[in-house]
Image 1 (cartoon, rainbow, N blue to C red):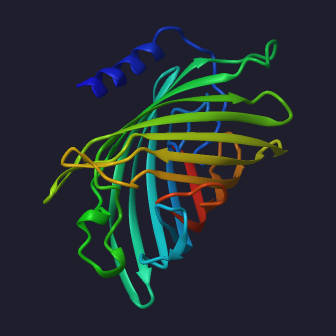
Image 2: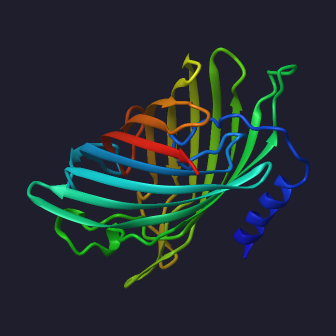
Length: 296
């Protein structure tokens, strides 16, 4: 009930004062938040993305690397639909389908589904470009995909989800009216328990920070890059805290995106998981995602 009340508060805040427009957000679908974003002139948009991750190296609780026991490659097809609800509020629904491979072995399955809301609270103007755009984020992930704890296949080839529902609340701040674009985002994840045979498993709360910088290569072509830092607290099994279960990871992304106002657009994103710094219970990997976005 507390999570529902928080989501309703975000919606009510977004309806308080109308804003004339909203600029592109900080991570713009590239940095670990919702993948599809509406610009001020857009009412609805369809998003299709296809990505692959490879070169996995596992990082244990002591921060030491070891050979990955999971898939060699993870393919992910993602579909999303975004709809403007009010002048300053839009939502999106995201679902995905995965394909994992290890040598000659392959397994496919459905992943998790997420419902996202974004509300613009503060909007800069040409007169005061130093004032950032500020958006509030509310999201819920539904853990429909099979998790590591429920895996029934060798090398976790049937794992496509987190295994639990989770609510995310956050803020996105973006200075988009300077020659160099920059901003930051913060997401706070509040997970729900996953029911296992040994009792309920509750993951630790998530703290995710995203720092982004970029510029317009051309009037209709944007290049942005950033750092995504994740930290998740210790998990508990049947109310007993699990030793060395804290997770830490620092990841990088670089995105090139077209900005045609009344046409289809494309986005190419390169990612590097476990790129630098202290890592714990995480993984190193390289990723590539190509996305197509179309106005409806």
